[in-house]
Image (cartoon, rainbow, N blue to C red; front, side, top):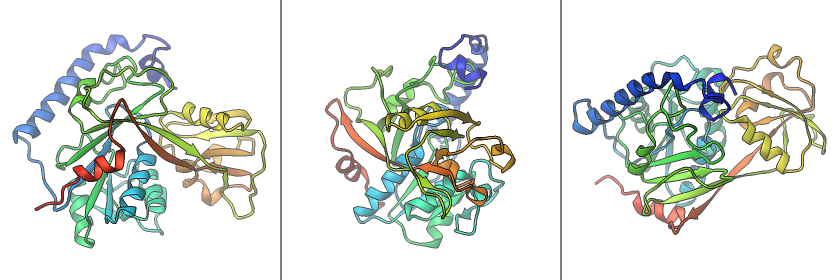
Length: 332
């Protein structure tokens, strides 16, 4: 964790003096949302339903595995699904369809992984309305998933799914920069469902009794080599990760019984180069999101850990997919 994250999640209280800026951030956030609700700022509806996968905090909450889970389940239900994403870190000003010849640097690491794994068309652009219209102009779809699109209010949405880190929760409950939140915790009362990733203790959240809530568990499988010559054998590894909550990755690895000899963590979305990993002692085990950025210079003893999301209803909530399909209404 960096200094800010340690303050947000309770290791120190050094960020609390920033609370006046958090109040200003909260005011701007609320006014912006009200402006779209009242029509003072224009939002746009596209021709098919839009499902937003997002969060109210910064950092990783499991949106990518959740999006992959949705793509798999919805395609099995016979729906044609497309994905729009911002393309974080990529220099993009107009919509770009993610193609096999792209690299993670071209389109962003998460969209690149989503395109490889989901079997769905993926379009990236900071303007998700433009991305959605571009996607629909290319092929017929039944549904668009907006990855990390909760705060992108220009694109109207039919369902909002919000993920919460079950280990770190909402931290000190303050908005940026004094805390980790993009929107106030009360925003959770207005969404369609909450998904809690890797809960390890009592939830800090006070949610309405009728709000569907689901626990997500990331089920890992055997490590996969990044190179054709690599072969996984049980061994102590160095963990490499550039994700929002790398300690969750470490806990997953250790729960599998894999010994960890060292950890090398980088900022979220870090652009790996051979030099950045030159001093790392193998064998290396990384996340799949990080692996897609390292394939071109990977060594034979570098591996990644695939994970598959599994959802369980909590507190009397309905089974997830029947609930979701019931609430996805086609445009008339």
